[in-house]
Length: 109
Length: 116
Image (tube, rainbow over all chains, first blue to last red):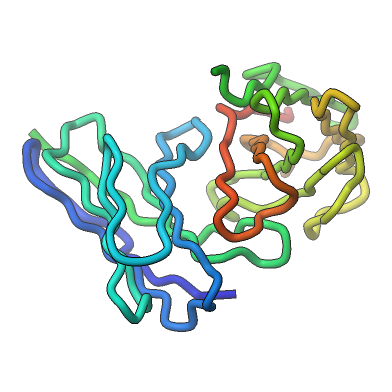
């Protein structure tokens, strides 16, 4: 199981781009990288998933360098509603997701 | 396309009672898993079902059980409730079996259980 390390918290202002980096030094060859967003009292929401290079969807981009030992979730022009906990998951342990503590993102006006 | 649906959304039970929570996965999804989330322990895996069979189980006592029906809908049951069972219970579904890499897993909004 690839251990992930994320910052505990980050602060940003509305309209800024936010980049959250996740370290996963022992990522396995067939491991995908997945990011979830969670608001208080709600289930985690799938944001984006990737294997290598760059993946972009309507809400975020995921940058993965060639060695895949880290990944960066990029949120363009954040708003107050992006205040949430963001989880980086790499591979899976057996057949279950293992969530770390995540990164608390606070967006201020 | 409807997401993962969980019912009830909120409920309050008394110690010693039992509770049943329901989950309807995304249409076409055959794998359903359950998680417990508490402030102290974070998100913890309970169990996973695929084709009506339990495929994997987390480290929870036998008071926690579940099942899956032929239409992939799932229920989890907690018997002899304890105060520490108060938590957000999350159901997740996916197309393929298990949390295999690349298999995207989608969560429901959860059921808030308060034990008094």
